[in-house]
Length: 359
Length: 129
Image (cartoon, each protein chain N blue to C red):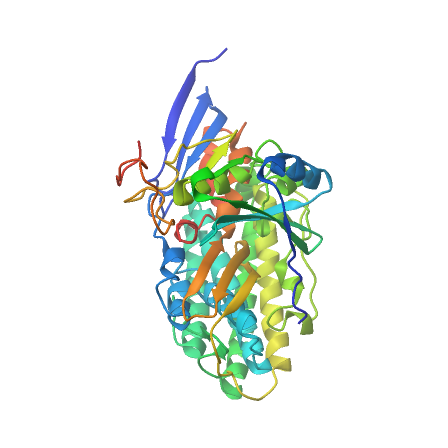
């Protein structure tokens, strides 16, 4: 039997912008066990909800993460709106969808860039992030912010977007999408990319189900699950279907994210074509009462907001289960049997967002 | 949009492993485990999903008898949630497959999500043991 060695991976590592630690137990170059540690920067934001006014917590919810900020704000607002029995105007629902899908595109582009950097394709990394900047410019022009969108609030959205700006946005998005296809071609067909990712980090359909994987991780293992199919925002008014891949490996996770970017562009075009005119917010009345669980699809997968109100201005409980938190056990399973050199790629394919996880 | 039904079924803590095993056999996915402290003690909810249908198991515990059996024998992925219960709410989870023994999160004081920290809890510290 080969001698066992324990290699610490993280919390500081070139492929990790945020701290997560793995103790990798190796036999020669093969990982036989991986023990994860998180919790280096746990902030206790959920507890803060018990001392802040429910309308102030929207600002905090958005700041759970700088990448997924838009949908964090939306999820919190959606939960409170359910507790208040508040009907959100249709135009606001469409705007939430548009910003949510822009959020998905920029997050997937960010991930594709990081993945390219991790497997040593730096030019691809730079071109991907350059394109992402163009999209963020549109987020800033329409929502007002680049990192924290600041778009969602309880009852709707903070600002409307004029029709001519929406049309200009669609026209430029079509150019961005065409440029993305050149990058997509490289990600999907380049032999160096495929040789690093194909057959690496396999998560079978059964493992994905039992270990509770979510989002692109789950869909790249052949499971058609996407909380957008619940029909929140205006997803029930668009023509779309859940995408899946059956490769179950790192390459399948690249493919699913590339296809989801294309789908998000299409959803934005459909939403702009169908967006109704009208108000963009409704005034909340009273205080949250009762309990609810809002489920939304972040770029990284299903996110859960459990809210319980007791009829006062403070929530009794605010609980967020982020996609990365759910994808940690599948990560541990994927690492077993992997080569040490493949560990960075495998860790990255869950698209780890530790800021979300350490809410 | 139709509002999603989210029913919760009351359960006895001792039956959790058996009930979780049944759900796993039926193809349910573990979605989240959440704890809540109220004047009656602690309420812990185990939420499962199958084909977009969501259902929760809910157990009640008193603060001085905050012990539950682990469901990691069927849902291994529950180890993250159950370690969180131990760290933040001081719930003792018996039979946990991967037990961080209260060191899952770095925190300034033990069980920070309890409104009144338990007497005799471990000394505060910002570092892992």
